[in-house]
Amino acid sequence: MMRRLILALALLLAPAPALAYGFFTHEAIARIAMLNVSPATARQVRALLARAPLLQTPTCKAATPEQASTWPDCIRGMGDRFSYSAPWHYQNVDVCRPFDLKAACKDGNCVSAQIERQVKLLQNRNIPVREKVAALAFLIHFVGDLHAPPHAGDRGDRGGNDVKASYGPVTARWLNLHSIWDSPLAERAVTTPPSPIRAYSAAERAELGAGSVEDWSRQAWEASRDTAYALAMGGDPCGPKPDGLVTVTPEAIEKMVPVQRLQIERAGVRLARMLDEAFDPAKAFTPQPRRRD
Image 1 (cartoon, helix red, strand yellow):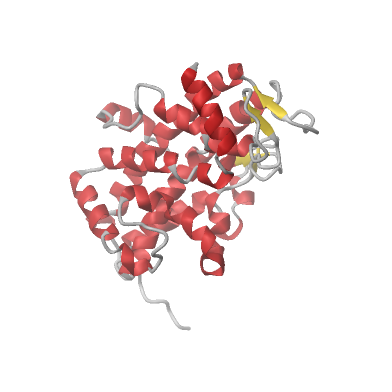
Image 2: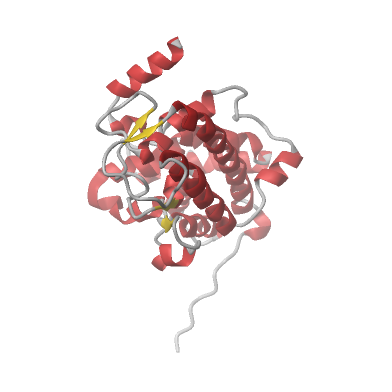
């Protein structure tokens, strides 16, 4: 009870930006990944991040996997320099219509397309080191974003940002369905024993890491529809849109936590897989020169 009271007080006092998904949970996902990559990949990741000063973002660090995991959120506060990356953190696939990733990813401006793009940049032998450091930070961050349900599916409400909500009895002006999943719910999923931050067995990695980026997109979209929206909306994710405050009850939270925890475990193990692929020497390539007709 005391722990819950402390959490409630912290939620009431903390400003919304301090609780962004790009902090505590992204760092946890990065730690899971680094515990599950090959030793060779771990060395290459740390060696590349040692070149982070090339990014010339002194207020946004990226020298460790944990720092790199939050760098793409940090740079969003730097104005026009990185404004192009804003749409890369999510994909608003309508949870009330058949799954259609293509429509939500026009011109590659969505999180799933950017995951695949960053891997290719890391594999490309011609890419300058500075761009590779940025690609690595984006990859670490975006795999986490993809697995956050409100980043993967919504009801035309900006990933639940327009759905004002309470977290159990806790209310605050900045709390909404999106921020609940990004912050208190995600932190609870990570901190509830047993810790998901560990080395997984080969069998666990094979199960959790299976599938394509599109498969992962569909899973996160289903979690958004069947858990985030359904439990918040009283069972019907596509019912009437609420006019006022939505109460995410303690009973709903108890059902949401395991889903969020599984998404975090998947994100960490899948990030490890993507890093192993990105730094696999056998998959490195030199692009062919473009033809001039």
